[in-house]
Image 1: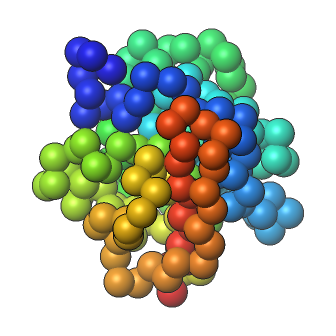
Image 2: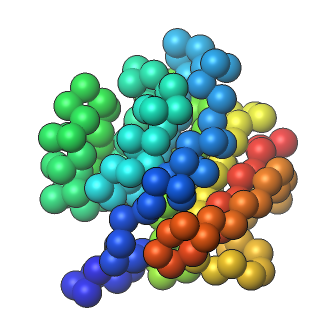
Length: 175
């Protein structure tokens, strides 16, 4: 975090409570064989583990982490998962014709450059299927979420106090 604060949103990994709140956004029973849940900014994998524990099949999960050391750690922890060391800006190309039903994001949008954030959100909006879900957490407990497209409608907001620091999980549905 000290070397690259824009790439790392915090000094602590997400707690089980926060990871669980993120995973709760996904309905694994509604996933077909061609459907994908994409996790952006997986870090050390707490949300990845929660998604798997929540019942998301490994074949339906695509994990994306930009940091090479963190992506290597994820590949070691989850050897049977599709883990990509790539930037979220390339989301459409990573899906390879599959139907993205949910995007679970731990990206630190408030510390990323505005132009990068806008490109990422455009990729998410373009790649997410109609009716698909987008879950994002933030440490800003008050106020709205930046860069949310107009086609995304907020469906839930949940404050997670059992995290350092406390966080807010907001889930949107693409209309």
